[in-house]
Length: 178
Image (cartoon, rainbow, N blue to C red; front, side, top):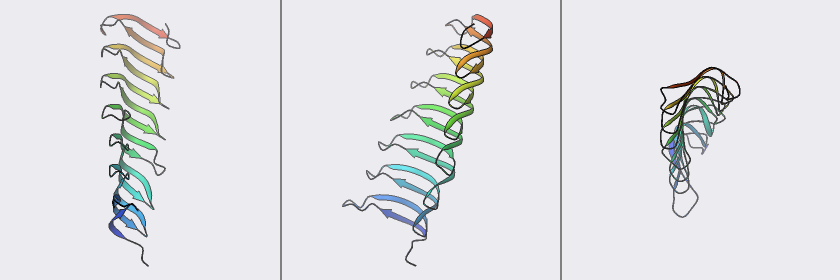
């Protein structure tokens, strides 16, 4: 039928014959494990394909400048879904490690500053700190531990002085205030 099936390499239609895709094909469509490339020959995505597009499973996404964007699980729509690592733009610095749901931080996770210091660890929902968690100051010391709602201190918690050890306030918080 003239349609490629099995392992193969697809090239861009340009003078350089740069690789567009390496991997499995089924009836001209990307299928099974493969790697897709930008026209500048840098890796764009490596992972599972089905019927010409990403499929549920593990994959790695890269920027056009070659930096990692995301490594982890995603759904059939390409949304980050399951455990993964999100990187800062055009950097190898990790921004978030944890669970995703429909492309948002959801479940247990850790948010890091660009200098790799921990900013938050705990429960998240829809990209916000939600539930029990710990917030850290930019010097890496514990600033707050307790309940959060919409990324604010809310409910029972403990706030610390800048040394991260001495308790400043312990009790009930509402909208970030005690």
